[in-house]
Image 1 (cartoon, rainbow, N blue to C red):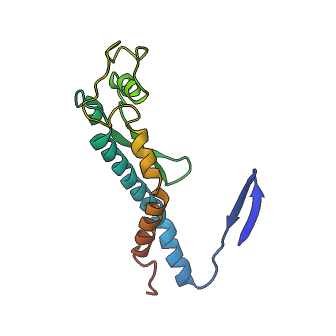
Image 2: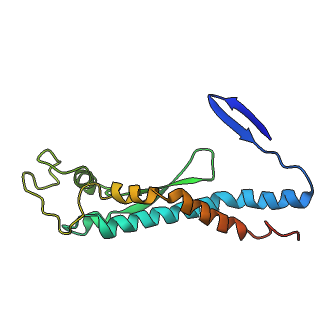
Image 3: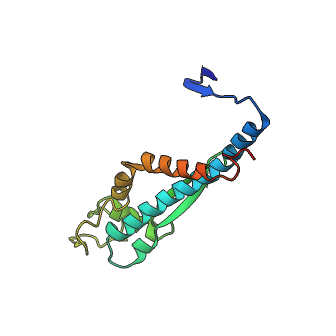
Length: 163
């Protein structure tokens, strides 16, 4: 095991040595881990999107709710992707999505009814329709992700067998 400081960060690494079978099993885990992680995080993003659409997005029409999507962004130099939940990717829904999320007011873009007192169609919906479910999900996300990765790693073919 090696631990050092590089670029202001503490970094460490482990080099496995030993029989070929052990190295093969570890190699299978390392190869499968990015896809497993991406799958788990995509599931987290799906849950956040569903919670937002079901419980927080105000519905005047279905356009805002239906504009919700998950975008996978590859991280540079990695097989890992970032799962991003977003609303209103295309115009004109982008300005509307932003105005509603960030507390609409008389200064909001003209995509909102200027000067009109907003009557949300369902109690609890309205501003921060994505931030609220994200904060709620984040509270225990690391525990859920770790548990799912543990289960996923345990079923990687050949990772925990001697044959």
